[in-house]
Length: 302
Image 1: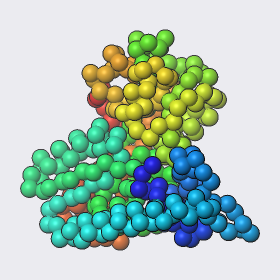
Image 2: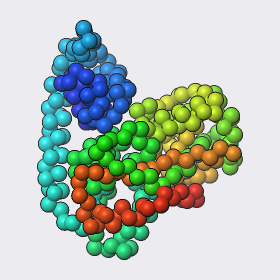
Image 3: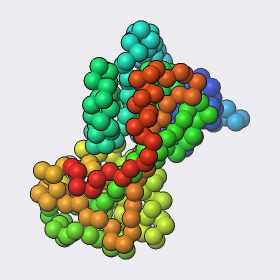
Image 4: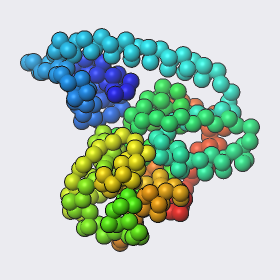
């Protein structure tokens, strides 16, 4: 459970509309529904029911709404204060909000390239959930966001494709696949899989890839963090599909084994997003300039 989920529940309670809540939080209506269902599973109680086309909170939902409203208000107040501080920052400062995998494994190379020619510019990077990145950029909390496979476009945001991350099958050292370099896509049918949670754009991208090739995986676990997925795979709980760049050199061939898909290239697009309505500083414009051409992330990087 995280603060963004509490905010989604608060907004749903306030608006009584899944579509309005989805729009306010830059997620899909399905994602709103799934987040509320997760809350109900964690809390072990029904939070709302539909009555004459309206959303009506249960007694448990009303009690939880009060708590969610207070926490979300404190969080929003803190963000507002941070944003106010951010408006005072110097023109040569750039703030980036990014998903973990893109920030750790991909954009660091671009940042080093930019700083080599702009050593006086300060760049700060914060790792966030994909839904938080939309709001960070829209609110001005961040100048830029980086995320994979954005499933929803926003009229106020520019989305620039900047990289392609190779996706591979990840197996543990005890797996029969350990030691192999490639795997046929048809071999995945029926395997035990550890996936991203369904609300993540990368999960939807993976699901689409598997459906396209007629693969029906056995979903054993759904997690919300690459490192947690890697740990579960290393323990022998199942296999997964992750960015090749997320597997470090000291892991590959030891605790984890990365296998390419034989004859079936699978690349995950990485996007840079920024606000259309906010004027970019000279430093920010210079940063965008290094992404003129989409590039493929080097396969050998860990």
